[in-house]
Image 1 (tube, rainbow, N blue to C red):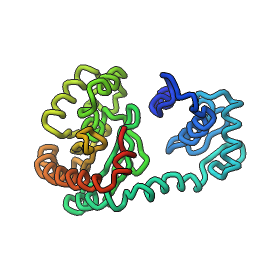
Image 2: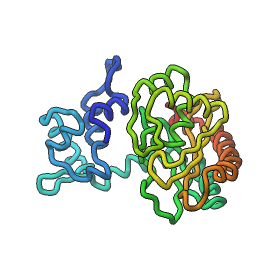
Image 3: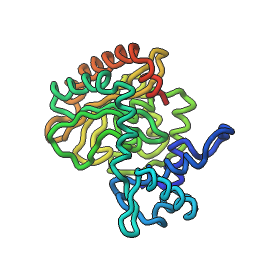
Length: 278
């Protein structure tokens, strides 16, 4: 689990000079909202304060405000999210035309392969799932729109990181050593740097048992009109269905076609491209 400080830094709120018009109160409220997740669906005031690294009095004011606005509810001594928070995410999907631009190529991948297919962007040292098309198969690691995973343990994350500008890639590697999820997780900066160099040269990454055992995936980057990486897409499935070599051989051409389709569509939707950029 990430520390509160690391989470705040990933969200772009720690370190560095802030715009003089930056609203700290708004940032703190959003930090409180994002503190709730699958492992923390309900929290007391003290738990919220600990997870957000906020003073209890500040966390309390944020919670009271969010309760009044309908985004947070209270059950006995614990606070929890209310369905109204869904309007925030749905506004992005609707206004940025995600369903029209991104989902058709992902659905085609799923239909052709039987794999799950996803599109992600960078979020600090994590990837953030922006679109996801799943199968009926169940995985130990569940993913969906809004899910975040550490970049170093996923093919999506490494396909993105490998194509970042050199200074941004170096800043990511400076966070090493990274969390180990399995014996195959790459955690050291030198080894990860070597892996990213290889990914940049060959144009894709494939991960086997790196985030959890039994999962194999292959991912390619998505580039904007200025040739800067803005996202990545992947196919992922169970190792009981297919070997890593066979997955790369059969899925990579389909992924590259889907990436090309998305890049072409983004040229017609410049607002969506701009919103996906790091």
